[in-house]
Length: 206
Image 1 (cartoon, one colour):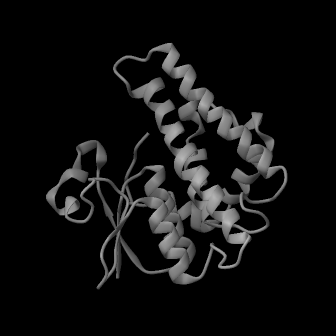
Image 2 (cartoon, rainbow, N blue to C red; image 1 turned 60 degrees about the vertical axis):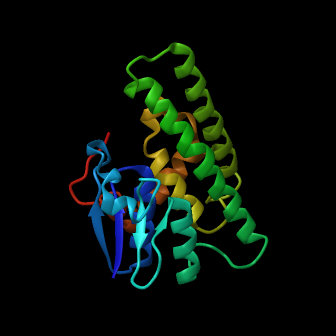
């Protein structure tokens, strides 16, 4: 059986949503990052970087980094990532926006608005502005198509949705981005998304 190591973070929730969408059997193992459990020897043996999520499958090396896991699962199951071009390129492009901009910028904004011992105003303004730029990009794109990569729901949407769910971390109001808000509600209505956001059971991280 697949074993999924993660916590209540958007990067882990991406993977949980994907597993739920695929309907595959898996075991979820909670790794409490606030308690620094990601640096336990058993986790470092799976990912030397000491991060979750991690996907462990019988007879295969563990896979870490959420984007790599999403691509692997999509290709292994033939879902949520087209094989044909240019559709595949569109998914990969928007997936990278979620992986390299939306997630990191939102995390930085959360750090400089809520978590850092000191919260200099310049750092807060800079990181919030980066998130706003990405939101405007996504809102514009979603004014052209129902989903990020076009007509179909893909791993680009799966990667982005948990981070948009944290819009409060960057003081963003979805009402200011109507196309993004429409997409957020539509994707959030999917039962697999709702189930995936609750994995691992009992985890809570705000």
